[in-house]
Length: 270
Image (cartoon, rainbow, N blue to C red):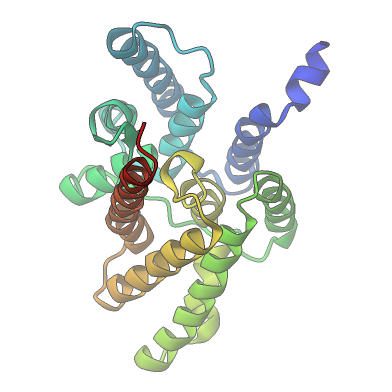
């Protein structure tokens, strides 16, 4: 298989896409704090993944695309004048995959947990990315077009669309309650933070329930909790909402799946 053919395999597309978000966002609006921060976040994620896979699973992890995506997400989504938060968030994110597990599955989206933890417990050292594309619509159209193609290919488009429609609905409600302009409420959707959130975090195959209806219900609940948090002036509402709803949904899903398996065994004994 040629190098071009390998690159065009779908497993390499998400890392390329998130790199595109990084490049477009940085050269358009300077979303990166420093080049050292991104190198530290990516390097720490990959190194932690390698060490934990060898220590816990007994083998070196071969596909490091997930660790790369985690590292680059961390470097984009948090801002700090220090370098240590990028290292710590990367370590927490990757460790969660190996430590916080239920019935053999990790239940938190790694970067979502790491970022939420840091934003909540170290608000004086870090902040979240809050940049929109502004009036430059071309980068947003490119990212959204490629993002939709990717989640469609991954059979996760229903998750992204449900979240976006729910966000628009709750933004309208919020504008009515607060008396704020509707366009102001939906403005975050035009930023790199939400692109990563709707195309990577809420659609993560490893931490989403299996049925399409279940996926749509869970992501609607994420938007609902985000709506409530925003009304209570939580700045990083989307991260916290997914961090609260996602693992609960996964635990319920895995427990129901386990119960069905037990019922099947009782119905058809050996």
